[in-house]
Image: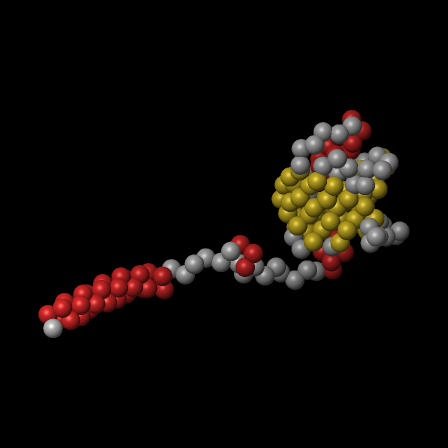
Length: 164
């Protein structure tokens, strides 16, 4: 009988200790929920796009920079999606944010990869990035081209990319 009492007392002590430990741990867990992984974080709703912004959305081939055609075979391109700009200079990938206000496109700073290429491709990249670093007037030509013009009159000519 003494042995049964000791076992019951030990069981009761263990149950109390577990209950106390669980009771102390549960409120802390309930107060601080585990953060969601980045992919599952709720996204801020983007404001609806006006007609001017809708015009810009999509994939574009760069056909001219400052009155010069792009380097043959360079496949320079831009993609405008939501509030993000991405693309390829003919040498390096680029990405960043942009916004459109009152007929002007402004990037929030474009970043690129850092590959070295031929001198011609590096000149093309430098000119393209210099343009994207400015406030650009947005205009669509009568031929469906998108013209982005900087303060100094330098123009970036884009045509819609055809899905392959």
